[in-house]
Image (cartoon, rainbow, N blue to C red; front, side, top):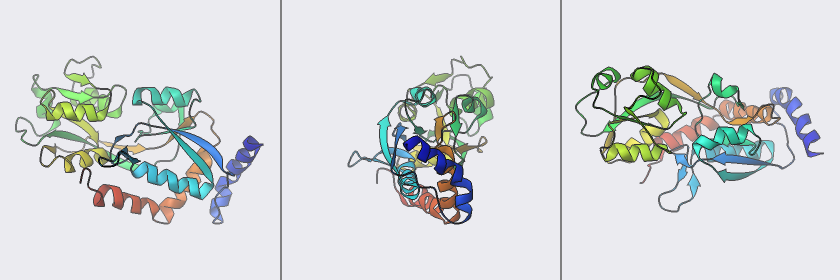
Length: 261
């Protein structure tokens, strides 16, 4: 019965939004995979240890608007897309870039943030200030997570296109790569502007952003292929864009919130 109710709500999502009403999924439980390592989208509060961030606030708002109950499961980035693809989770969120290769394995929601790819370096870095000068110095190393947009940007847009390039050092989490940058084990970390600005703001001058943005990317939630949740959640995202909720979340987490402060 729940599946039939969800299907009916999904079919009505588009027209329902047009007349001001969102679908009601009747309290359906949705299991969400998270990483909690991508501030300010999702991370552990330094003081309380509570999982907080832009995506948690957005999902709480979505849950209220379409009447779902959410349960979170922490999972590593490299396991997230396969787990969602296989239906182990109903949804995944951790600042996931919408890309065609990933869309072969999972369905994406509409974009909820458009961000830019930025270069993060130590605060006292003076050997390079853009991608070209970094690439020209073979002694310089970059941090990246395997399978992420920053990894591919590092390899294909900054270096030589060789995925096995020894100048790219792989880390399980983005935070580990940033820590390696701060301790001098690598010289560059790439991230979307949301996370980059959060880490730089919290570094007390230990990190800075250099160079021009290396392209833009759109973030979306991921679902198993054919998921009936996509349309209702897209309807909620659209309503949040139209009534200013997304702008308010951007203000709260990208401008007002001080990571570590």
